[in-house]
Amino acid sequence: MERSLLLVVGPGRSGTSSMAGALSASGFTAPGASEGNRTNPKGFFEPRWMVDLHKELLRRSGMIALDPDPEGLELASVPSSRTAVRAEVREWLAARFEESPRLVLKDPRLIWFLDLWTQTARDLGVEPTSVFMLRHPAEVTASRSTYYDARDVAAVAGWINVATLTERSTRTSRSIVHYPDLLADWRSQFTRIGRDAGIAFDPAIEVSPHPVDDLLDPALRRMSPDWDAVAAPFWLRDLAERSYQALLAESRGEQVDPALFDALRGEYLESWHAALGMTNIERRRLTRQAERRGARRARTAVPEPADGGLRTRAASAARRLLGR
Image 1 (cartoon, one colour):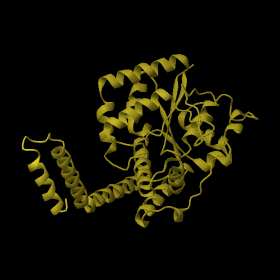
Image 2 (image 1 turned 120 degrees about the horizontal axis):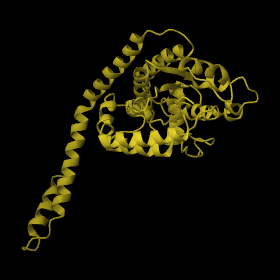
Image 3 (image 1 turned 90 degrees about the horizontal axis):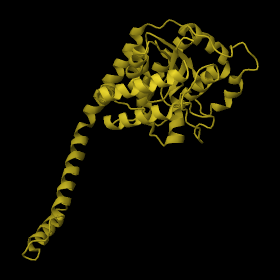
Image 4 (image 1 turned 45 degrees about the vertical axis):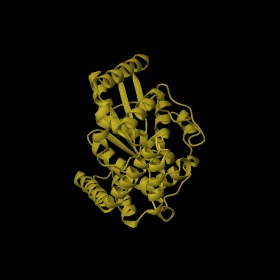
């Protein structure tokens, strides 16, 4: 059987687990998939090995899964470009293909390392296709706030950054799937994915009852797209909404000018750098405060001098007088 690889991408809490699970019930293998928990009771369908690797690479990059930094891709590329990492990924992926010729890989952190997996697959003679899961940013933010205690402003900014980056990175080979549309009629969504990727499913989507019928449940959608419940400034919500609407249009078969997506991402970059400029003074102030605290801890850690500590006590008295 010819080898196939589907990479499920999109901001976390966008239905990536539902998609990977549905694909795993349709002839694809999600290797070493982790079990579910209260945040995702039906399972995550993501390889534990892959997740652990991505977590470590993000840790080395100083990043998080839904990172709002538009330069995050460059940061993540430093550890992931190392020869040892690429060799490890190649060995793991080749072994998985020996076990099953049709794989689905999913991890909310995958977008930061999409080039790593795409190039590795190509080295193994497989051309991967991306399935980009889309969910309203207010729903994603509410879900992250509920289950991961995320702050709304950072969550919305992270959604914009990851969504627009995912659009740019998958532009040549992808299917965008709206999460509510998947839950409402998964067969029509799979028909489009099969056409876009040139693949067939097993069991065929016409089979009824089908394993996917029991896996996907509209009750899985527990949040609502309500911006009034999101504590983020209007301009940030507006940019997220316009980015979402453009992606939604493509997911429903409309032709969207790539220049629109480029403009939306450009607007986010401009806003990001403006925000950094406005907070630069505060960041310098916090840095100086941290440096002073470090210096004070270093002074108090010095052993008491031979004069009985008179100089140390005098210095402490001076600092108290200065209010430091």
